[in-house]
Length: 130
Image (cartoon, rainbow, N blue to C red; front, side):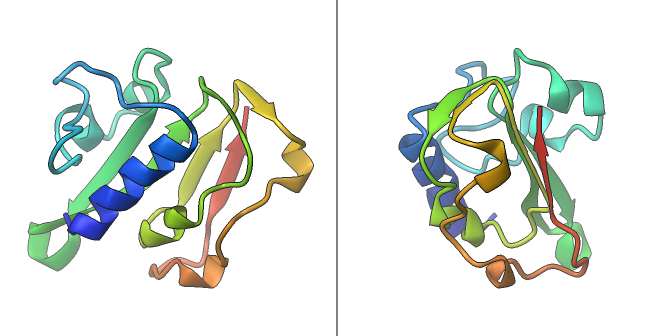
């Protein structure tokens, strides 16, 4: 995991005034976050409200030696304001799941970055609003 990705994730959570769960079983909050349940490919693990915020990693890059965050869920958090520009540093992110209470209009979410910054093999990027 690249350190700018870790810094970006921490900055995003700081701007949304949320934090990763404290359980070491979920994922590492002080080092490489691609650990614990972040490596699970189970949708039920990713969507479980107790695992909130949640990330999912894909560790198949560079012959299985590099992990990237591909999914981020803050579906059970209250937040307001724009989607932080640091989200653009999660280069392989393809799903952003938001919900709970968003203090703004879901039809006019303000992304603080250009989608062109996201460099991935697929041109698909999904925002799921629950």
